[in-house]
Image (tube, rainbow, N blue to C red; front, side, top):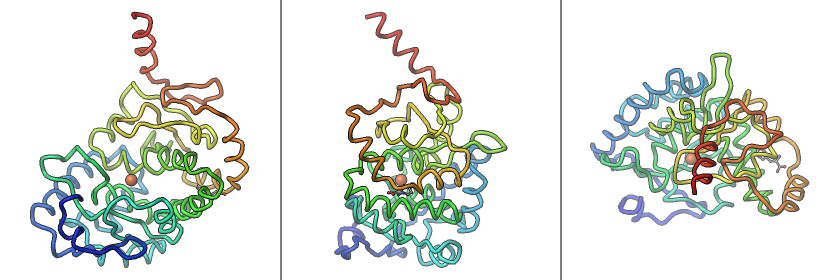
Amino acid sequence: MIDDPIITSQTPAEDFTIKQVWDAYTEEEHGVWDLLYTRQAELLKGRTTKEFLEGLKLLSLGDGGIPNLEEINPKLKALTGWTVVMVPHLVPDDVFFNHLANRRFPAGRFIRKPDQLDYLQEPDIFHDIFGHVPLLTQPVFADYMEAYGKGGLRSLKYNGLKNLARLYWYTVEFGLINTPEGLRHYGAGIVSSYGEAQYSLESPSPHRIEFDLMRVMQTDYKIDDYQDVYFVIDSFEQLFEATQQDFAPLYKQLSQKSDSYTPQTVLKADKILQHGTLEYSQSKATSKS
Ligand code: PHE
Ligand code: FE
């Protein structure tokens, strides 16, 4: 975003939103979207959910060029009541949660440079729109995201932000899902990544563990590399229902435990779908030294 004049010339509104100024995108910027879209849409077949692929189509995100919010918002709004708003950069937690609680998804305006297709300093419009928005066309997931926003505002009161952020990370960003057709991904961080869209399903390295709410809320995550652990849901309904309970007592319980788990940890109580190889190589490394 840093050097995007359309962003820096605007004074954000109170809710941190700015205008997209779609006409100001350059041919090169539209070209980056097209390149990423074509590469990713092909890769996702058989790897991501049918709900996601349906969302891509419903919103016509592959019609050529960076999507224009004025075109996708009426469609999305008609489907689930969600809209996408533009923000200049990562926004404060309460602002972010407030948008979600009102069915607005905050997306960055800028797009990565052609020589940095796989490198991202902060989420760009390809991650934010291609990665996050298709599932917002699906009613259960759309409800989950709104509930998450409301839950986020509550978490600030109960000192539960860190726990709740882990839930976002391991579901909305890096979630896997068991489907009748096999293991698929639905997390936006995976779906928008050329490397991780393959690694998350195909690499023997990471653990793949059945989703458990309290387990997830105690697990740290890496922000600078592919994940060492993925949590697998059975359905979006399961995810939604597991999070319908009051989290205040859960935060209280969690605050009494001092330790979190590293991403490499495997617990006795875990229902392991695939035990990653990463633990073995680590213990080898320790026994050598
Ligand atoms: N039910 C949670 C609470 O009481 C809110 C929440 C909903 C959190 C959905 C995450 C996802 O705070
Ligand atoms: Fe994201």
